[in-house]
Image (tube, rainbow, N blue to C red; front, side, top):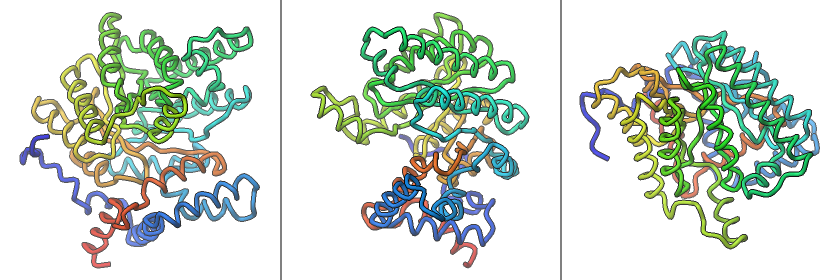
Length: 396
């Protein structure tokens, strides 16, 4: 990547802006939390104990989680709990993407509940000027066995066909309501062995609901060697249908699981050979979307400073407004505040993914966040380094 343009006036190392929404007391608590997460051994032990404690409903477990890691990475246990987080983010020109965090459900009643929760989130987003998007997971709306059978092109039984029809109806109702209320839907990516039917379903929704604006977005995991090609393929399909492509780009979330399964099943790993290859495809995807920004509405959903800077540079080079409706940035709530708040402060469409849900349901999500922020080398994590810098700037 070329050197940043000095006229861009965007500095991701500016911790004063990054942590302007935190009081000294809040910053100290955040520092304590990230110091704990910086210890890889403590995180491993804590993760195992946390899963065990939640599974067997040990006393005080939820209270401990609620008072420590939960408020760092989650907006609340209910939608209403999230309102104060939404309002506080908007004070600093930062948008909110609502994401119901319950995972791994297969019972039809639970799947209906997930759909109803998503519909409620759309209603709430529509009542807030600062919440333009709701995220959803197809795996929260259908038994994953159905997706795997479809991916493998297996014949579905009558019962399986009914379950898939229910999935289509749930997704269609979500997208229809979002379209009606002017909200967008980000559909999460999943493991490669269930992704094809998700891609097909999301494309059907785009053809139906993306005619005048991007209501529906698919997610492209660029650590997968095929995803840059799939992004371009889907763009061509959308051009042929005269609809906008909605594209959210991430690096990916299932690398170790994907590689292990490829070895166990004896097929070539779909994962890039190294980080450099992933970075190249990710930045190529950003560039492709920017080059076609009139027909692609995209989101750089990355915690990588270089990729976010690349998108900002391309906006600058093309002379586009910072808040162009087709060009977006987002990061997870509780992480990479140096990216989100500096982008928002400079007038870009910058958002936080705000996950919410009952503590027992979001524990897997919280464990992933702690593992991401632990240090393998023993050095300070990126987050802790930035917090430490800000505390020194404040003389704390």
